[in-house]
Image (cartoon, rainbow, N blue to C red):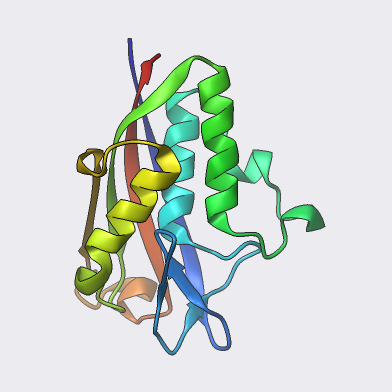
Length: 158
């Protein structure tokens, strides 16, 4: 069987916060605000995987009302998601991800993001695709107030 899920996440840019996208640090004057490290890319991937496995969403599993998750690396959250999926007899086949923001441009670190995501998901890097787009200056993302990400994940039975 094949299982598909989609994920979406958005966070506001803030000062004095490190920017992490797809598990990779970016040298940028702003970071993303959130209860965890606010990695919109990994959050979208996590929600896509959870959706494909019918396991709810990140907010249910790691609520922002629980201080246990405050400031946690999204890589750790994704590790926990992969454990849950594997316990269900499923594993990730591939993911396709889009980062949506005016800035920063990710082209120089795209391959590094794909490599890091493949390591976390325990899949070949060829099964991870990262791309980016802007909103052509439209809306809050177009005004560089924040960033978003969407992902689709395909899971298969072990």
